Image (cartoon, rainbow, N blue to C red):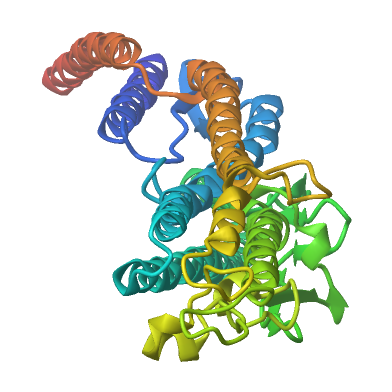
Length: 454
């Protein structure tokens, strides 16, 4: 009789194990597309206390810590190049298409001066030179604003990225506390969230992750400064740099702006602090050169009234900021007759107009190595090359990240075919154990009726 009851108990445990297996497979299928979810596997063990059978020892997430770490290492590189590419796409818009940006305005200005050299006494030709000069200056101004806006938006992106980073580190610290407090409970869901938060953090900047004995993680930036230790997070403080007003990152009273070089934050910081200032310096050199060369010639001649020429452009105070501040001399705007064409003051003399028009083809920039158009072309090419390079690097890094993610999915991802096979296996096992349970139960009832009747 005791043997039958032992068999009944063994069958009940087996039924529970098969039911748990069905639940686990169903949970896996239900979370097929859930971000951060790692497939669950049921732990089964033989009962060794003499009654035999099988019992559930728990449910665990299937993960490969090496692949997880490898993915965290490649995610920041892709995110960095993606941030650079996104920012430079705006800079390219500021540069404009060939012929529609500064190159077109330079050509139109020198064309207008050439027209004046053909008819140096024409008031209409002088008005055309003044008009094209204003449009050229406005093009320099708008291009400078476009680059400044790109830098400003990159800075906004840095600030938003830091806010997102602080929210994620606070979440990781909270998850660490929850995992520790959960004790022997099912920690799979909490660890999924923890893993997802760490990967999201890796998109913002590179981090080093150390798993604690209690299941939590400690997170630091590559220089070793902590972001999360146990259930405590350390927020990065945002300040503003003097002069530029750009975001300055501080952690533990230490300026770490130059230490965050990867991920989205690193890419935007590099764009804001290195790439855009380089473009702006080139643009300012070009604007300063145009103003200086044109003014020098314009002031050496005589206007339509025979008076000594004035500066055509308002002289820039310095190279820095020349593009943003470039403007035609207000005196010429109200009186185009002040536009100079003559070198001697004699009516019909066109020598100054010819010399200004000839600046189009003279290598007066960068130590006499480039014309104005070539200088602009170098700037436009540099922006385009940097953008193409960032996009190519992003594509390359994404390929590496996708391959690592594919390898990880082979370990941790949910396969519908595998889970369907598991459900069939557990269902068949459940049915077989149910039949066995019913048979043993019937035997016990029959035996009890027999003994009772006797």
